[in-house]
Length: 458
Image (cartoon, rainbow, N blue to C red; front, side, top):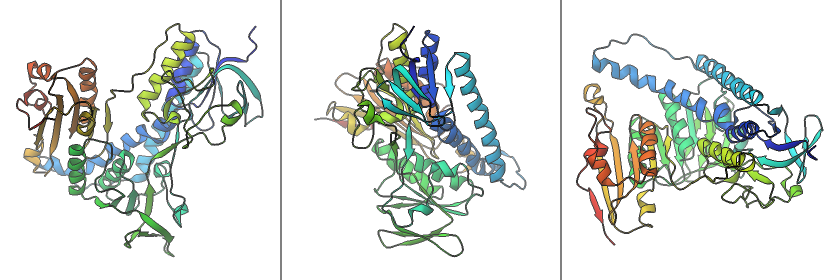
């Protein structure tokens, strides 16, 4: 009989933790999991999934306009924020039920409670005071939205958490930040009809992405009506007698809005977990320090997902959790390769990207061939909408290997998934060139760009 209550205990019922628990249980391990809020984690409950539903909703305003270019007469239309919220809540509840059922089907014992360390093998469930022991422990508590606590009046601001549950759609909203969450929500509010301001401390939105892509999406987002305020941040927030918010910026400008949403990044969710009692090392920002196998400095304690501050993407957390479970209980040790990950930003227009940016590629070799195509999508030849699509391929001129592909336009996320397979297989530009185009599609540009737009040589 084991000296521990569980072979593996998982703290956190998000995507990474749930995958690890299910796979470990399928290998025959006795597994427990504690979740203090709702199963599914940030992505399912108040992240990627509801956000994508909101993106779909916000696009209809343009779709109705575009329909006229194809002969459709669209009559009177209206939008109900409350109806969208109710439909979203119903779908999220359905998904949460699936997460719970899948855990139960594989034999995972679930605890609706916060779990905190008492020592390296012991956890206390705060809902009941019960203590449990585990041979192995996995920390999968994700991340939390940030607010700038130095700003006077910051208590009047919301984050993406609250944005999913607003009772009314604000008439005027300011989003603070320039990352993918900020840009996505700016598109959502704008598309649903709110006067939208996006305030960002840098000069171009989406820091960390390829610069050509950043400039292109910045231009397109502004053309759609989002007021992008660069190189500025709020300095003070005050609530007026009419309930609206008065935002004073560092540059001395004043804006009056109904809602102020902060999207300035997320922090690892480790506060109060008692990691010091277990001897688990953390970074200054609270992230759990792990090696390539997601193992902490305490041999039997692991961590996956956003709490490690590696790559904050749901599919990455899922693979990390799967790898830990296979390694511990499946007689199949493997690690996740973080070097080449396709991703999408559901901005408007949408972005898809895989591989290195041009700036990163220059650290690999000074000899690059850059292929760019910027054009109007075929759909808009009839709608008349002034919107561009961008495709960019970055090639190592020394060996013809494709180092990165960056896209802006309809279905770019879908394209990025397929391109991720190509780059994982080590595709060369010659491989792209040998591929027969699918016509008429936007994606055919990827295999018909023959001459470099730019040749960089060291």
